[in-house]
Image (cartoon, rainbow, N blue to C red):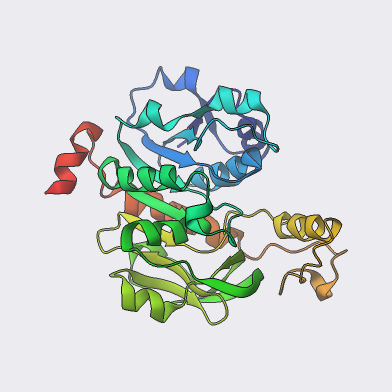
Length: 310
């Protein structure tokens, strides 16, 4: 089934070039189908790049998905044209009375910033708490996972001494959970963060199940028993060159970054990395949409609050 996005969104041309069936809003209006409604709160500076990455993964499913984009505020962006934001993004006040099948909250480059010093922290808290009544299943990515743990479990921010950057091997810990159905016993995924997610810390202070973890990277995939919150500490949505772009950007900025681990062939930053996580990312997002969204969401979204309270 196709993914439904605004007609002129840049991701549309990208997906069509990859032979992914994209349905425009104008065509979708003529079909009598109840698509899954997924809202993406995009906190990343390069919003178009993040849109492309997430929409690509959300399109890899037999379910029809209707994507809406949400921004945290109206501040001017240095990395995304104002016309793009004004054309394709909604403000929270425009959706606060609506319900959604799924929500994705992206990461943000705030690893070394305390929550209280994030200028939009109160807005993030409000949206996370709103999602408890208005979204069937919410997926928190990277920094958003840390924000979600703070908002819903009051866990303090934990920061690594050095940035975790590279491709790391993970173990599937609960192979019978639907979210990891079809996962290999071990798999690779990218990380780029200062946040620290020790498995023992998460297990001791929450009721979440740690479904996958890495000896080096710590907890990777965690979920609530009711499937309504999923915490993903890595970046399976990253393109092959994303870590390379981050590394070379920091080199040019004079930050003397460490080389991403297990990423460049021969640890040579002039070599082109090989993608070892694409199939994992596709399967993870497909499982989330199918088992954690489609299987638990009501057909009539207007009854979501009653269903959840029951």
